[in-house]
Image (cartoon, rainbow, N blue to C red):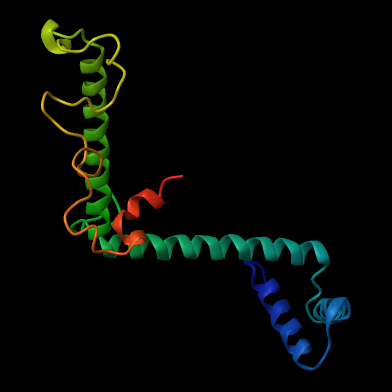
Length: 168
C-alpha cells in the first residue's frame, strides 16, 4: 500500500477491536497479528508507514494554515490586502523602532554636560539630596502646618486621616 495508508488501516482495525472490548497490549498485539496476516506487512514496514502518515499530516496542516493566512492577509507574500493582524504587527514593529530611537536620544541627551551652570543655584550641599524642597513661604501640608483640614473634626477618627493607616 504505502503513503501511510497501512498505518491508517491498522488504526482502524485497532479501534474496531477496542469497541469489541479488548484493551491494553493484548489489543495492539492482536490487531497487529490480524493486520499482518491480512496484508503481509511486517513491523518495520508498519512503522515506516506510520512515519509517512505523520509527515503527510504535518504537510497538509502546514498547507491549510498557509492558505488560511493568505485569506486573512497575514502572509507576507499574499496577493490580498494585509489583514488586521498583519497591520497590527507592522504597527508594533514601527512603534518598537520608535521607542528604540527615543531611548537612544535620551541616553545621548543624558550623557551630555549641563549647559546652564545656574541650574543648581539655590541648593546647598546640605539640602541637595532632599526630595521635594519647599520654596520660600510654602507650607508642607495642611495637617502639619495649619491643623486638620476643614470638616476633619466632624468625622470619626479612623476616617479623619485614612492615609496615616496605610504607612507602617
